[in-house]
Length: 381
Ligand code: SF4
Image (cartoon, rainbow, N blue to C red; front, side, top):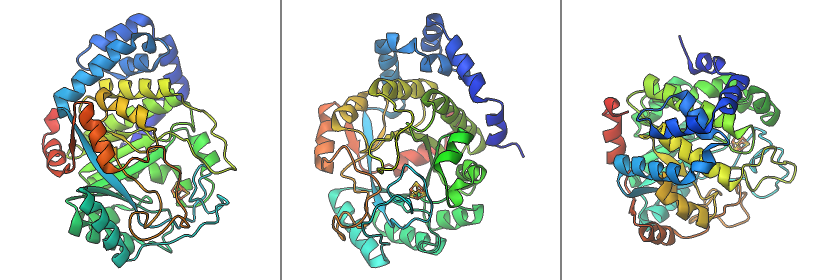
């Protein structure tokens, strides 16, 4: 069977970089004018010549986003179900060898209900459940239970957990799960091996295919990303876009979203190898919007309020708000429980909502109906 790995093989980093380096200002111009953009256009938009056309890129990104999504920003909240992790991803605060000593906990169903109740009271109708990678502490059964509890409170429940087999995804979708998020972190196999030292996540190929398994199993919202700061951002951006296009074909009933996590706060032992500047970050976002006009683009509270507010009008469609990255962080546990990483945007959901309105957009708490519409219209992509 043809998989994304086969497609990735056709685009080694050297070929991607050659395409980006060969792009000229007139290629950027052409990419801006086209109605449908191909890989060469995307490469031009990632090239060092694109920032000179920032105003035009921003205008086009805004036009495309408003045409597809209107003036809306969907809000969601993460719920960390557990911070127990047996993997060793060197950039992560949950890693088993991160050196962090705070408490590791897994929410039981009653605590899950408390967390869900607190978020539902704030207005959230869409949540993302997260765990580390520790099947011994959080087996698929426990994730199934967490999904069932969350579905008592929210119409839209997604997960960001360890990669699973198809049968596990099918089971969770049968319980009402509608979204699966899996970040590849970096498509660069060598860098991937260097930062993923222990656990199932160290298996590059199993992780690469996981999001397609989820889509084929019935997950109607798929979300992919690279962790900006690990590899060459332009090459990783290019491979992310290829992956999204591949998934649009392979899992045509699902909507394919892209997130933009950028490394900021990391454990002491880790040094960010390829820092991505704000200007590069915005260039990547604009290029992605132009390449994938129909894709939800997701921004978390890893980014600072000023940048998040600015990006509302430039292509972002989904934002987390009022987040906590510690299990039980909304209603159950205190600050002695280990968090995955420190956040930049500490505003309450109401404050984020006000900022979105000030930008002339409507915050949307319920995303389910729109996701369903998107999934039902493959021709729309
Ligand atoms: S990124 Fe995920 S799997 Fe890796 S250490 Fe952190 S929680 Fe564990």
